[in-house]
Image (cartoon, rainbow, N blue to C red; front, side, top):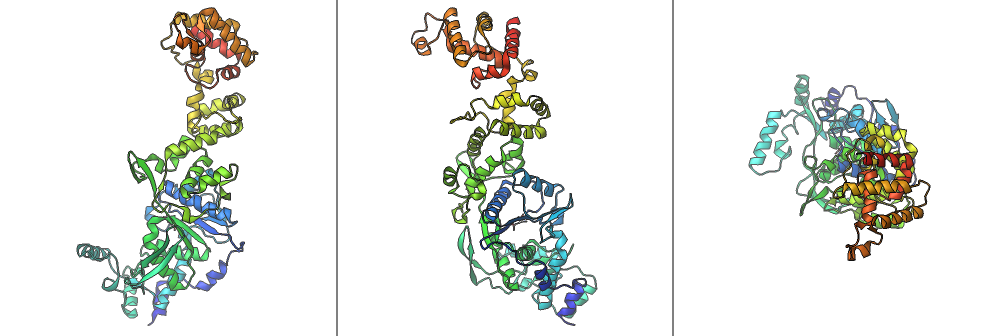
Length: 550
Ligand code: GLU
């Protein structure tokens, strides 16, 4: 009995060779500098902003170089899988218009790309082919340690302050004679397959991370599990090796929590003689909390989850802008020089990523978003708020649909000019800032004239009603207001009034304020003349009548 028998006993149905798979997944036919990146989420729940940062960097690197960005579903940990997680990831990539070039969606039965399957649980045979090869070569072995035994080892190691893991003398089954392994398997004993590490923890190797730079790390000497006993699926480490090799990933962008696994990946690639992809480990996302700075937390911070941004209605490109500014320190300067360029035209340089953590500031996002929305056309704002309300506010959605042109006129107030107004930070705020323009909301609302004398309010509104003409130009309109002020005893010159208020009831500001409140309930709004032009005389007069009648 030899290792060949052992390999065949464990994998009776695996008949292909590694070379056959390499032929099935040949080198990609791309330009010389084209980069291949992948977003490889585990479908374990909501999407974290850190994952989005990784995906955005992946996308930019691939698109900027004329390469490929693909989506791989890393679902080998079936116990942690959450229903709907993959669909949500797909939705996010589509929402932010970062569609992968290659993907596989089980729910709609769609696959695109020559390197399928892109769902790891469907690649079991491929992984097992590689594992079978290792078993045959004596570089991997079945391990019969039970959970209780492993717990005991771990406890002992923790107590003695030793490194945790299965290595050296803890790797009890590493040198088990093949005959015995075969017998145990035939007897139905449960086992995992472990790598038979050839590393030495006291030896160091050099590793160059494109973001973190050159590091010196100890070799791996852990006999890590590469195949789980439960379902025959590989562990993350092993799937990473096989998939990124066969799918010809050139750049792996992943969270810095994986840095500690580099020695394992280094050994795995070396064991097979495969070239490692380049790695860009991305820093943690940090946030300001009072005076201190801490890691953004899914428990404490709603903005850690991607649904936050969609619910608020940040335009997709505004969030991407904010993310790119934390991804690369020179992005903002580039943007200033290229105001109209698509973000994928930016050449990402991993070195310009902060290794100590990326500070993500919601105020900054708000500024970016406000500025972004202010530069959209009225049609684009309308499309944005319509799309948002369709999902989050049906009542408003119905109004927007009914009053399309009218709504666009509202968004057009002081837009499309050199310094456009910055009224809206996100789409969910638009209703809050424009509701009074719709009779459906306005007519039922309470109008409060604050400290103003109601008799005086009535007088002003009655007087104004008589002189108001919809067709007046802004200048005519303003002159009429001034005349009215003089007639009713209000100062037209605010400065003069402040210096000497005695002879007046108030100033022109009070008069326009009263008109503004009557029409909108508010004391601050965009340009009053524009508002009245959009409302039109019928609405304007009804609103005045409503007040006067009270
Ligand atoms: N499935 C891993 C994760 O979600 C992917 C890490 C990687 O990109 O390699 O963390």
